[in-house]
Length: 300
Image (cartoon, one colour):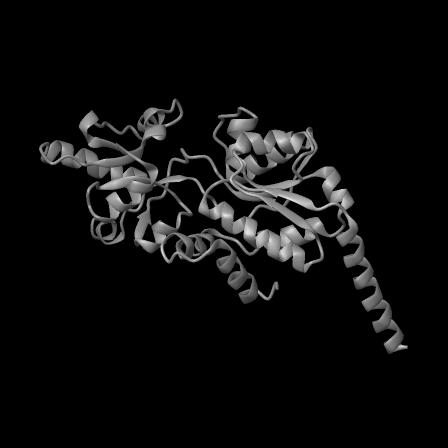
């Protein structure tokens, strides 16, 4: 009897994998930066192990990917809640991470897109400093940084506090100007140093600027031992990465939602920043980094 049950279990598993193999491949689109390359490699390897056929398409622009999903040319992607909220649904209202997720899940369902479980990570903007300096000066939040800037303005006006920003954020209507208003941060123009986004991390590490605008899950935050300052006024929106799949794709591939939710549950800011650092600083391939991570989690 036990042998018969085992045989039936093996047969069911083999049948499931056979059915999945015969179905049309799942087309996965990801964006053109390290984190997304890792997510792509991780998803392909894990889903193939589960018996799904996956066809990755990398370096796809955000808006193109969105339109392709709606037009049924792409089946799934890893999207960020803030991107859908602001770019796709044109909502600039300040929301908690949970409110952001609930809102985009509800709105995107209208166009046939299903937001699965978000990862416990938030790849949003933040200001960062050299960790040793931030701790020595007891600066942990944006408000404390602003207070430090103002103190220097009042006591040592010749010693400007320098901020490193990328060109886009400095000029965006929802960028530096409203940030200054939210935090009542007075800056003279020479205090803002505009540069390529990738150079900001080096500028903070090497002391060319006192603080810089970074992405919270970038590998260089961890690799360069930078301290991310808390956005204590909640200015920056939440960007929780989440598997987003077309509803008809989920219906055509039983078990896909469960598999992707399992993968999403493995991710948080510390995990993804460590993986990003292995690619950006240690120069490992996204495929190698993804494979080693999945093996460590017993998912391969």
